[in-house]
Length: 90
Image (cartoon, rainbow, N blue to C red; front, side, top):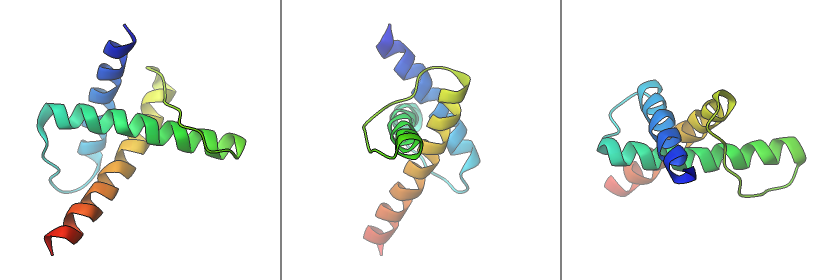
């Protein structure tokens, strides 16, 4: 059941992040899910770092605050991915 929640969280967070971030990201449904799951880890880790001052790999849960944190993390992941792919294309 936990894996299904991760897939749903990834789909929701990735879709919202792709809608917010300007430009074309591509990737399809699988890319959106993976982007959202990466965003959940990035956002969760940043949340732990900002609240406790320690870096720890953490993820968010399937809740409204968890989705918001995952979307923020997914936007950061899209930004970093665009930086990596743009610099290799030049």
